[in-house]
Length: 254
Image 1 (cartoon, one colour):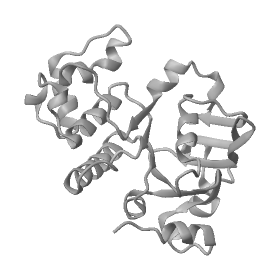
Image 2 (cartoon, rainbow, N blue to C red; image 1 turned 90 degrees about the vertical axis):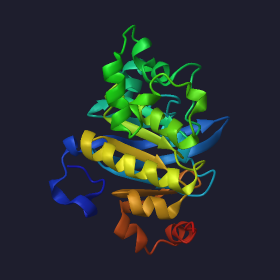
Image 3 (cartoon, rainbow, N blue to C red; image 1 turned 120 degrees about the horizontal axis):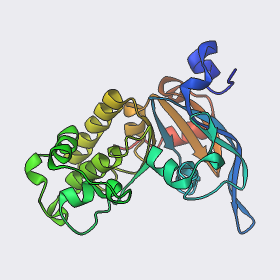
């Protein structure tokens, strides 16, 4: 029986409910511990935000989940398999990372959209590409548009569409709305809710916008100085007695 989140989801929690589990995970570089004894679980089909001050280790934790970095101690389990048992390319198809920059390759919207398939020596039909655009509320007329001509919000939508091409079970979101204006930010938030609902995808989201984290999430991890201070439901985090949690929650964005 899992002990992670036991207060939140009760004794009925099964291993099948867990998408990603950290067991005593540490990450060290140049004799400096960036992450210290990380324990916790991300629940399948739920959105969990990771919040905390800069330098807390949030982005490092995210990179461990798709093997951009490897833990120096402990064990990470994804969908019941230890992360070391995955082929890295197989894992990165299953666990997609969407970053703040929404990096585009040179070419059209379709060129960017079918990139994950091109890397597997496959192709995407125009009809398939149009369906992905519709899934993220982009006009199908964009298909042959130069990706450089897209706005920041449109690029982020395209980045999310591209992440869905490999049909991932987990999407890692690293500050995906921090560079967007208010309207684009709201559009991406609505899109993420739609994707989670329609695809039953587990989302792990780093954000410095505390209001956003509390508004969007099912669960929240609070980190500080390379440690997980508390993991809980939004309601429990908002009412936490932990002074470190209070200090982070007190930094809500306006």
